[in-house]
Image 1: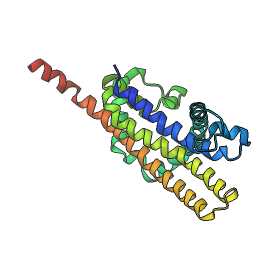
Image 2: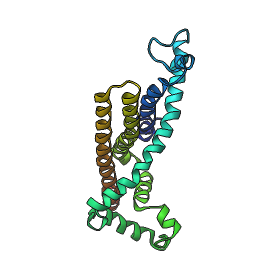
Image 3: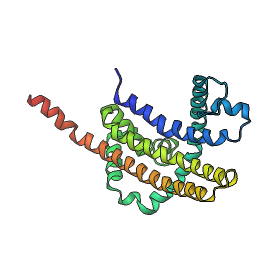
Image 4: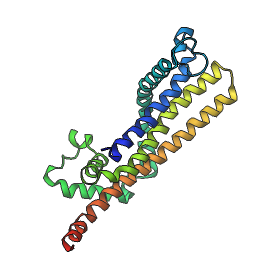
Length: 223
């Protein structure tokens, strides 16, 4: 039986890896020799190469290249952390504080010491995601949707920069190059927005789940 999480994992792969990889493959194919271009061309430039083979090679190249684009996009995460600390400090983040207090109460003696390798590697956000996955996996649907959106727009930033360079240097289309840079800037803004919303929803969900856990037990006992 297909679970919502299985479907959303496919959606996340598509938006965060395959789609940006397809754009990057289309741009890079321009710089390949003609005989190699025939295997990744989805138009009429495929020559005698079977369309099924071309489609398979294109998808494989897009998926592989998409992982590298995803890795480059992850370099933007420190800039997000700086933005969050500057505009959304944790000391004024009610959801983060509530989730952190809940984590401390539930973990008790099992809570890693502050500053240890374990504490730095397992953040409150990761703990909250694990809690939701264990106690209510279906509650992750909206969280994963926002996460997929943020990863897609994060990957679109380096793709837009590369596309801008291609349009300016190879196609000599300066206005399109500027438009591609503008797309990158808007993608970064969208990435920050969607990641922040996903984080806040994660904290709120884990707090609500824990707060209503006892009520669910009482309701079952009443019936």
